[in-house]
Length: 149
Image 1 (cartoon, rainbow, N blue to C red):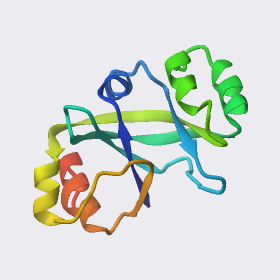
Image 2 (image 1 turned 90 degrees about the horizontal axis):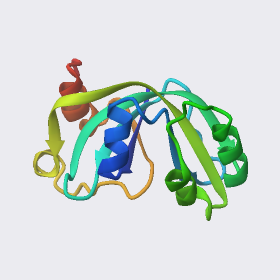
Image 3 (image 1 turned 90 degrees about the vertical axis):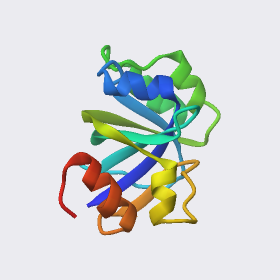
Image 4 (image 1 turned 30 degrees about the vertical axis):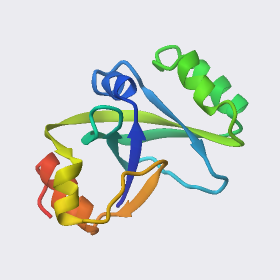
């Protein structure tokens, strides 16, 4: 299984974890594939600086920003608005990932905990793709979720 690690501002993380935001919009590179069923772990930036939880990807919409905005706008309960649209508008490609089953970790994973296991780790600036056997996934994310490694 593929695990995607994505940075997110605290306000948008809150909206995902409370169920208000049903689509996560991202700038994308042409050819970057995300698939329904992929697991997304959210690194909450700003003053939080911790991995707070995750969700499973449902529907995926890809294309030009105008196309993605138009398609997401057709979903009245998307929880996405102009603030989200302005983020992707200047990119060449964009994607919208439907948020399914958001989970907030009981204990957030702070960067100092990550650095004890992987000393040279830097939080992602964009979408980071990991395999499910990598140390970050096995030792931290699965443990936070209550899964065995």
